Length: 98
Image 1 (cartoon, rainbow, N blue to C red):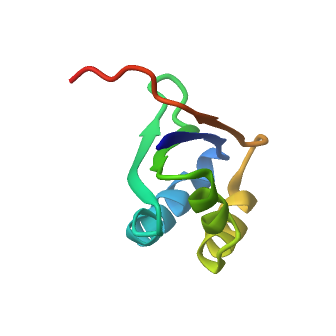
Image 2 (tube, rainbow, N blue to C red):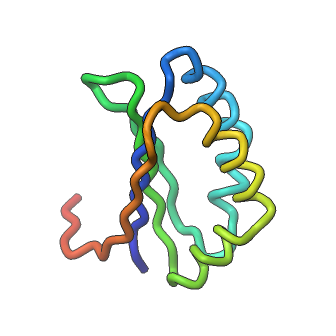
Image 3 (tube, one colour):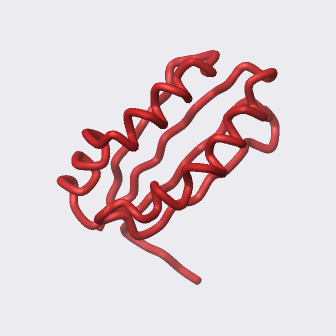
C-alpha cells in the first residue's frame, strides 16, 4: 500500500464549487477498486490550498482510477478552478504512530 498526496491551489472564488463537487464525488473516489483511504485538507494559512491524501493497494489501482471515467469527470471539472499547477507525490509510509 502507498499514499498519494495531491496539492491543489484554487482561485478563491472557486473554492465553494470545488468543495461542493468533492462532496458529490468523495464516496465514488473512496470506493474505487484499490482505494483504502481518502482525506481532504485545507491549508491553515492559505485557504486556497488543498491537499488530498489517498491510500492505494497498488500502483496499478491508482493508474486504473486515473484512466477511469470517474477520474476524467472529476479532473475535467476541478482543473478549471486552479490558480496554479497541481503537484502530486506517491510515497511509501514508513512510520505511523497513533
